[in-house]
Image 1 (cartoon, chains in turn green, yellow):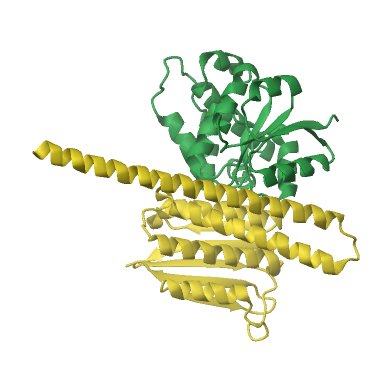
Image 2: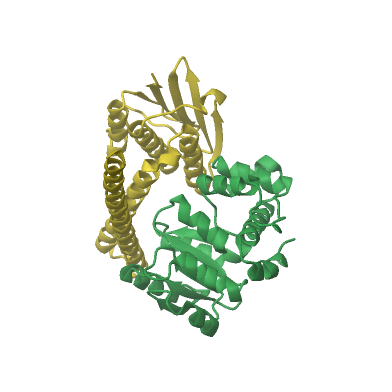
Length: 212
Length: 220
């Protein structure tokens, strides 16, 4: 299997260097590039064509979230994992709405980080109860845009609710009598619907094709 | 006259708000920087551990201590920041975070988690200090369970009777003889934290008979 090409955006020098070394020495991963800011993110992503982007949420100049929006305008396939020091809610939720595929805490051990990168296509990293709550209430609010018609299915709502209670994927699978892969799939669908509801029309169009 | 007094008031309020926001921004940036650098220390020591010779136990020890202490600090900062956020101040947020934490730690050790939270607890409001110590006692108990119990099942029970909050964490593991085990830092910590918030802490264990940690806290 082709190694995943990873592009890093991280402004803390030590952290960036640590990630560079980690990716470089992990089998199955290949370093595509590393930058300390997002000033040229559009041209960089277009040129390097990574399969996974690690994007720091807090960056000087163009923020991580703005960068995600910029990228999603021309690429709805690349996986974007947000990097954040702490699991404080507001920005992570905004990043998910902007089109991030998931997030990683910087306090996560190196082993788990590489695991998350490799598994990113199987669908999202587990979200905290607080973020699950924000996602759930987002879908319960009246739609902001006239063409916003993506609602959650019963199953998806159940899974999200379990997440708000702190359940792990395994616990949800047991509770709802489905496989863990099924749980992951539904969560992926939820993220997609979130992106579609929040994304500008041009992006939303191509995202809709991904929704089952 | 009244309008100019009001205008002055508004001006001062705005200045205070700006200062507050600046302090917040500085604090956030500081946490970001400290967190990112601590994280990178963890990265580098982990990579060094991978590279160091198998027989170089001295070096392994040193590297492990560096890794563990930077990770511990990161976790501690994370918990504090989570706790001070106003939207996390109801007990069901704390409980969800407890379950989230416990399920992750225990599943990694293949320990099945059973839990029961009474319905009447949902709207209980606890002070910041109590939430903080409660969560940390819980974390310590779960970490100990995962590390030492060799259990296959663990149970978390949270009830509210006559304004007393009762938390019980138990397992079916190998237990220990309380008289034999010198109170390690972890056990003393839980005792200390409980005393800080005026809670009653009790540890029950018998060799081969599992372990249970009990915490009773008066909510009035």
